[in-house]
Amino acid sequence: MADGKVSVLDIIKAKKKGRKLVMVTAYDYPFGLMADEAGVDIALVGDSLGMVVLGLDNTVPVTLEMMIHHIQAVVRGCKRAMVIGDMPFMSYNTGTRDAIINAGRLMKEGGCDAIKLEGGVDFAPVVRAIVKAGIPVQGHVGLTPQTASALGGFKMQGKDAGAARKIIDDARALEAAGVFSIVAEAVPAPLGRLLAEAVTVPVIGIGAGVDVDGQVLVTHDMVGLFDRFVPKFVKQYTKVRPTIIDAIKAYGKDVRASAFPAAEHSFDMSDAALVALKASLKEK
Image (tube, rainbow, N blue to C red):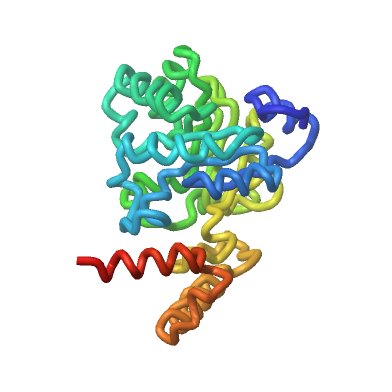
């Protein structure tokens, strides 16, 4: 990867060169900074922030304004990594004009480099229109969380031949519409490999096996910060949540015992100033 900001062309070239792409989620400035420092190719401001950061039950209630707010923070932290902003539920489902306007807001107000939206064949015309408007688009096939209830819940998709073929058709339709990459979520590993072979743009997997062109994980899952549930496809590289809780407990213990703040954590004043202050308090 060349020095400087990661571009759409860099992402496309990575597949041709056989270089795996690294993508993680980021929802705020500190995580944007860390993702950038770690050298990832893409930082995704996913609508998963609804569950991971805001405590919602799913991604459906996430609004465009929420996404813009979080994208702005991540953009401030990412100087090299490409920042992609998720199009939230119903921000592109109501028509091409709405989709273009809302995608434009994510880029113009949020400052992201590209947008991502869910859906395949049915949304290819919307993707084509957004791309034509000059906005880079990343597609998303397989398990699409915004419409998970219609898919039977958060379950693996493409299990039988017919369903798997539909996902491949979705990916091909998105490629034809102009996406520069595609996220494939929760599909069998053999299907992930066939998806990567079926299109010329990079396929970035999340629960799609190792034979795709890159991987994406929710950072809070990967580092053990969010533990409401851990999907099968997540590898936890560390578990920071217990460490943070232990630190807060230790702080609470020190506060209750008057052990914090100690002298090294406190500001002092000169004896003369203190004497003068006490004298002034005695004056009537």
